[in-house]
Length: 322
Length: 304
Image (tube, chains in turn purple, red):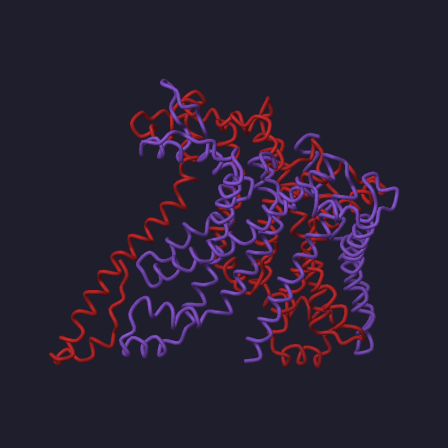
């Protein structure tokens, strides 16, 4: 396909879509008055309902069904795939890594985001300082992975060979010998997690900074007059005031981390015991052609997300009720 | 750096007792604020240095990248655009076609879901019909479905419909995955518009289509911009949907870079320049529309 062919296809697709919307709008104008509500609601919602039903509901149900079948998807195996996830040593490593990711990333990223938000609050150049931390959010996980893979790059420790990765060079400057950061488990998983923290701290910082600015001035002033120091201010004023925002940030990063795939795929491909559930789903479904296990891993991901979301919604409800 | 002088202390400049009490507190504050600035600068440098290193590398000759660290650039500066030429070309290791694909993928994948979501959000917000709340809750709840759960069945649907190998599976998938969040956010924005405004338009005999275009759309531009940026960043930066549905001729930058990183992990001259070409577009969009982006983020819009 040439470039112009691609853009022609794209233009045709957009025009086709606009034509569909045009028909919907035209049909909607045919009805008027209050009795038209039902008809207009139907045509306005029709494309959305069809797409969501065919693209989310049906595939979701089908995947749950497939998770009870074997690798080829032909014979019923009950809960065997789920048993494999929790017993086979490869899969248990995958679970261990996923737990590490989900526990470490939200807390460290939120802590860094919170500390930074407090440090730069009302500082000169505040918005510039924010943009520096926030920019990784707009970079793709693939781009971030390449950036960090370069930081971790390893060259053998020989006379004429210089390090080209920053981390190993710093180690050499400090008198150490270079390491293959991404090869040795279980520490390599932590070096992958660093990338996710690097991306998510900006998100935490932005939301928490807005929450900090919303703390009523008189509370801060009253605490200051009571002689509360910087640390006390942090513990007794800032953190309790922004608790709802903290919960939202932690859970949102937690959900995002649970589904992390791109970083592992790009940096190690899941080798060296670094795979996580979302990456293992991809490997099993598309590389190892084990449809049943792949489906079970996807369902596991779904099941793990539900309690975090439920907790998040309950928190939101309770803050709204107050 | 920080200007934390409490305004209260300036109210009573004459009181010496006040000044005596305040003096140590002030000194301590200045001290902590110096450490605070240092810590902030430290974090900022730590966060910027990795990107900076790759940016510098992308401008160095291939041999220099592979044999010396990027920090030696400052003692021995050699600048070339060869890496960018190689990456944007169509030769071996060239990602020019993939760069085009990223644009071809992202435009319909933003336009389609946002238009449909605007219609749906309007319906949920301002039209009364039976089953409205139930349907809205179902669509709201679908936000939590991880896209992994849908990929394999969707793929076979596309194959059945003979759409595989074209851009359609990618456009449609991104549109479907973006719909629930876009509907939810737009619905929230639409509910904030005063009911009287809608009622007044109805009294004047305006139908739903007129109300949608004349009354709501102008007020919703910032919200549409915020959601548009989210969807743009999400689609542009996506890897999973691309790997699943895109073939060789339709693969976007992310898929091509990920493959390059796996198979030619030492081709740093291509990886660094390629990563920068892929990064520069969302960063430009983000920087120019940051205002809307942050507003959208605070409205609770983050898709995982």
